[in-house]
Structures are given as structure tokens and as C-alpha cells.
Amino acid sequence: MSDNDKFIDSEIWFENNKDFFPPEFLESMEMAMDTLSFYFHTYENTMKELRPQLRDLMIKQFPVLKTDTRPVVLQAINDVIENSGRFILFKLYNLMLDQKNGINLHKKYTNFDDLLELHVRPRKPHSIDISFYDFIPQLSSERKKELVNELNEKELLNIKRNERRKFYFFNLIQKCIFKYYPEIQKLDEDGWSVYAIHVGMEYEHYRDECIRIEKLIKSKLPE
Picture 1 (spheres, helix red, strand yellow):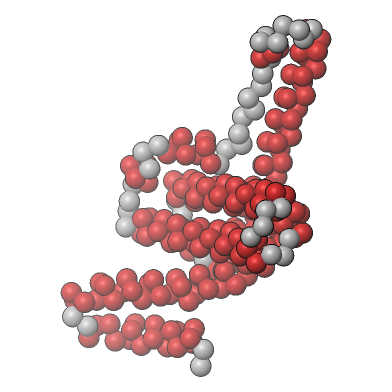
Picture 2 (spheres, helix red, strand yellow):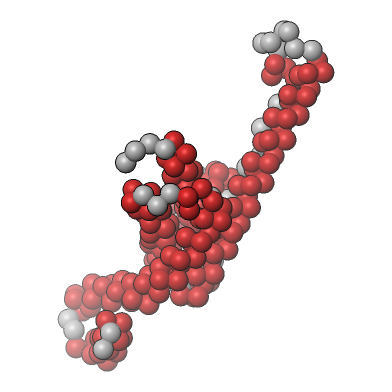
């Protein structure tokens, strides 16, 4: 019998016999069973499916990662995969507990709108004009315009690339979450906003860590 089967048996046993437990013990026991249920039914299954798919996504979005097979690089990649799934799952588990307990999310996250702007909505481009180059008087107005256009186009391309990467990360995470944690779809409107904030924050961590590993590989530093 697998550990998961054993846990299912213990869930059935607890449900059939919980009326025999002292009331002061029952609440903590129910909390423990809820946590174990999350681990066996949601966490384990989600991570098992997520790991190889997230690895494939990392290689597709950051191809340099597949060019170095040193243990330190492989471990760094594994850490990104493990932490991305782990952090999101536990944040969502606590989010579900907050909703279950009637927590006002706007009060818990006092900077609610700022978090949405920072971690969910597309970043607005910081366009510049020719005055940006006023400190170089040797440049002609025409040359300044060319340089400004180049910088603004580069800024837009970076934003589009980031949003594309974020889109595929969100889709992958959500597909696995919805499959093995269907309760998450019962979130209310504020809950969905916090869900997006959590996944958006973990995307940024995932992206930044992938960029860090890229730089490590390109630097060709010894272990």
C-alpha cells in the first residue's frame, strides 16, 4: 500500500470516528488532517507534474541553461524549479485558509492596488525624449532622435518579451494548480487578485534566478 493510500485510509478513519475525540483536541486534529491532505493530494501531485514541464519552459525561455551541465548549474536549475512550485503552492494554501476563515484581504494586504500594479499588470514603458542626451552637446538633434528611438524600441521589446514569458509561466502554473487543487477555483474576486499577485511575484523570482544562472554560465567562472 502506498503512502497516499494509507493517508486516504486514515482520512476515512478520522471522518468516521471524529465524534469520539475530545472537542479541545478535534480542532487541531482537523487542521493537521487538512494540511496532510494538501500535501498528499495537492502538493505531491502538482510538483510531480510541474517539475519536468517547468524545466522544459526554462530551457525554452532561457536556452543558455541547457549548455552547461556542471553540478552547480544543474543544482541551481533544480532549486528554481522546486522553489517556484513550493512557494506558489504554500502561498495559495494559506490564501485558501484566509478565505475559509473570512479574512479581509484588503486589510491584510494594505497596499493591494500597488501589488497588482507591480506584480500583475504589464509594466509601462519609460519612454524618453531627446532631452535625455542634452548632456552630450556634440550630438545633433537628428542623432539624438535616432538614439532615443532605439532606446524606446528596446524598452518595448523587453516589456513584450517579459510579458510573453510571464504568460507561459502563468499558464503552466495554472494548468497544474487547477488540475490538482480545484478548490482554488472557489476564490472570490479579491482572492483571485491575491492569487495573481502571488503567481506574479513567483514569476519574477523565477525570471531573476534564470537570468542569474545565465550570467553564471556566460561568465565561465569555475565552480
